[in-house]
Image 1 (cartoon, rainbow, N blue to C red):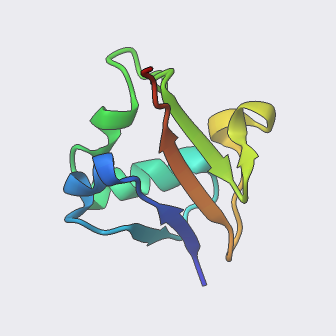
Image 2: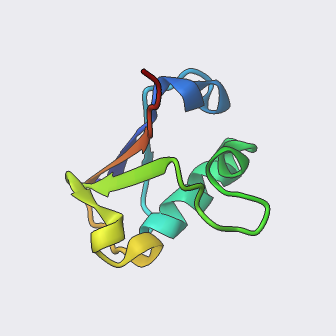
Length: 91
């Protein structure tokens, strides 16, 4: 069993249209790196040039915001769900 990563519509072009992908990596950072290795360009959409997660990108592990956990070092386990949600603005 692996970690399931939900891909938002705006990022699906980088994953070949996949709504979800799986990873066996142990942390959120490693999961994202694993996805980028299989789908080049994925990382560039989430991280700024200085390597920081873009401020409009929200990541959750099992509905828990990683900003309140261990951020990108948050551990993940088999069966967990990682959700990537870009912030929406407008009015």
